[in-house]
Image 1: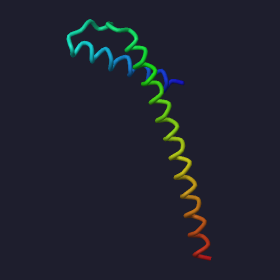
Image 2 (image 1 turned 120 degrees about the vertical axis):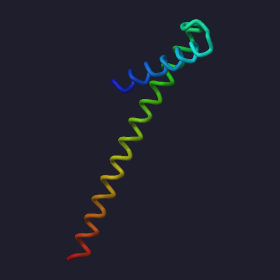
Image 3 (image 1 turned 90 degrees about the vertical axis):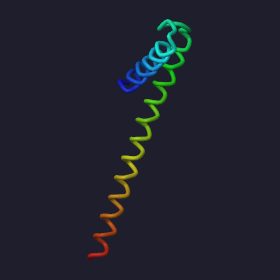
Image 4 (image 1 turned 45 degrees about the vertical axis):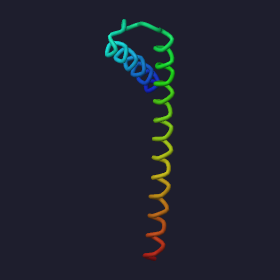
Length: 74
């Protein structure tokens, strides 16, 4: 959950920065801020899922490698 919140805050922060860089009022078009928050939260959630799958995949490959190494030495 904390990654989702961080992602949402990052999305809103990026939108605020984009508005300020364009010399627009910081909170103009509030729907863009909401959309950025949703996109940021979704991206953060996606990153966590990819990280979990990669960790699981690496652990499975390491276990298979250890098993093959043990079999070869026997």
